[in-house]
Image (cartoon, rainbow, N blue to C red):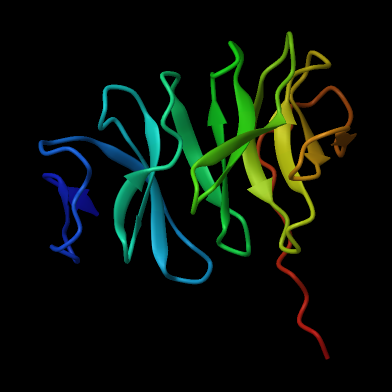
Length: 166
């Protein structure tokens, strides 16, 4: 937990700005070397990464960014943002801060990213057909595949763990 601008367990790591800020959605990286979280440090919600080299804002945009989700390889984070006027799913290369769109639709919202255990897909929710449904798309974006159907809302994509090899 991060309080008063410093990580409670790691006093040598601090947030970029002094002061008190709120942090949400803390996610440890799969390789155990970093934490991703949302913070209002800077005025709006941003995605920060706290690791051995310090703490830094990886999403850095005037629009709110939230809900960080690590890729299984710990190199990328998927997150939600309003950067193109609608809620969309983006990914950021943690080492560079390079942000790329994954699922951004004109006239629809996309949210709740979930990385597949094999790094090949990102599932997300979209209301592009009027009812929230779950879709999957390659991390590079492109044509999405609808995974749910019907009149019921589908709101929380989740993947089965990657099977163990014999």
